[in-house]
Each structure stands twice: as structure tokens, then as C-alpha cells.
Length: 165
Image 1 (cartoon, helix red, strand yellow):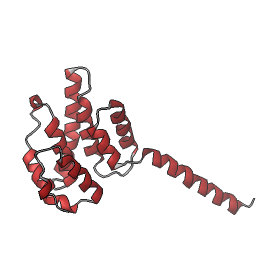
Image 2 (image 1 turned 60 degrees about the vertical axis):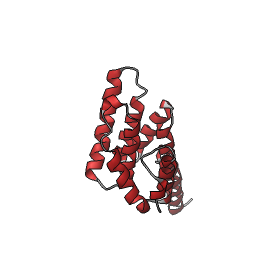
Image 3 (image 1 turned 180 degrees about the vertical axis):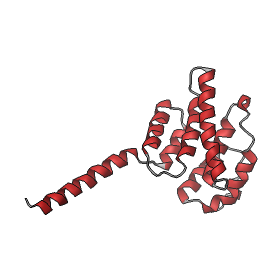
């Protein structure tokens, strides 16, 4: 086999194997929101691992932050719950501070704030986030619009009639 042919075969193998490895850790937004809305800690941990392995993912810290706040509910001690929740909140709030008009980040915060225990007092931005989501809804891709529309069925904060593509 010629050197050129070996080189081509090697490149093809690297591409195939590389896409397999990258595919294993690639971020799937729909899967993320399914995990975020679900009750399985194992799924949350797998998604956190996927996020950790994802390279170049925009708003990676915001996704991690929202998931950590959700996962905090499943910690065994109050101290552990609070520590994990604060860690997640810091990540999400920093992402929003850097991109205050980013609709998806506001959606993440809205979903967390609506379900956060009242004692945490993490509910100050619900109305503001709902307004940003409603006004920026049309700028989102169809998959994100669909996720938000599904969530609108479960909340009083988002009015489906106001969410127009």
C-alpha cells in the first residue's frame, strides 16, 4: 500500500473515530430540557458530564448552572443543597449579566425561579424574564420555540397567545 493511500486511510479513520467520540459528548438541546424537567439525578449527572465535555458550546455555564440548581433539590443535607444551588445560581446569573437580552438564558432562569423553594428568595426576576421571553420569542429557532410553548402549558407566567413566531 502506498504512503499516500495509508495517509488517506488514516485520515478517514481519524474522522470516523473523531466524529464518534465527539458525538458521544455532543450537546443536544432537546435532551437537555428533558433532563432539566425530569426527576432522575443520574440523567442530570450524565448531562453535566456531557456539558463538561462539550467544546465551544455557547452559554455552557448557564446550562450547567440551571442543572445544578435543579440537582440541588436531590442532595441529602440542607448544607449540600444550598451550596450546590448557590454554585448553579452564580453560573446562571453571570451568564445573564453577560447577555441580558438572551431569551434562552431568561427562560432557564424563569423555569428555575418558578420552582425554587420560597425560602431561597430566588424569584425576583420572574415577571421581567417572562417579558423578555415574550418579546424575543420570534427570534428563537423553532426547536427552542417549541420547548417554550410546551412549558407555557405548565405556567401562568407565559401566555401562549403572546408567544408568536
